[in-house]
Image (tube, rainbow, N blue to C red):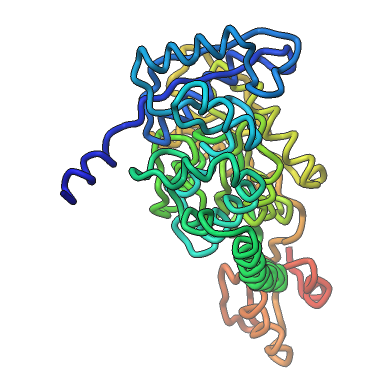
Length: 416
């Protein structure tokens, strides 16, 4: 019996994608993305339906004729699931399920489902559960029956599902508890940031559209071992690793959650911790999939979200990844670099660009410190990076990367 349930759970949900084109955005492109999201979640997309109309039908999104057509398609293709390319209210979910007799989820529920399957760290899991609960609380009336069904289908899995079958008061208590736990983790993260700043650690945030190759780049540069798959949202948890630049400076690279078009506001809020790393970085490495026909639009989405986070003053390097797939060359300059993270091509140019665009926080100094000031030489080891040190006849000859905070102490001893 257990084996039978296991086999049923492993079967792919047969999904129909449904959307409406009101002219607000490119519905076909958005539907392509929804299809990729559905496949990432493990669904088998059997067909899709888009209705063009000036406004949505408040009760069922689609008009009467189209909703009847959707119901026929679901019966004909034996669909297990209908995924709408927009957010639905509880009554809309209930109305569409009553007409089609098929489980209905929306775009946000699908993304949350992927998040639930991808989160690894304790913080990532807490953020997923909080986002699920906040999203589903006002929709309990509409999706309660769906969640109680056996099978753990797409849109029902994740750490928050058992709480959703209880009363609202219990869910609100759980939301409060999760929020408190996340605040504690936020405090620790802020302490880590302050420590990094105090220790003059330079931080580079890797940002970009989901599936652009951010984790592959981090792995290739640092051997970080981050999950890197050709799927949307392959990594959701914060990973940081240090690399050394050609000029001797060290940069801590931080991988962040991938972005998508029309990312719901509460999902940005739920994963703010990873995105905040970009707002607090010294430099932003914006990774684009150069082989994607929609590369420009996706890059614009990323830059728009970064602007909303207040990253406007931070230097940005645009990294065009997967250039090995192109049959032409893209123009490059000091802030636009072409690479292939998979084949580790173009890394020399990338590291050079990072070094040249970093804010001028650290200077490379060659010093001769008198022996009666040896305490200054010793202090270099605690707050700066010493490249070489030699005991000469007239003092200690040192080459070091010195933070601007300490540079005035050493200026009298500069020899070059």
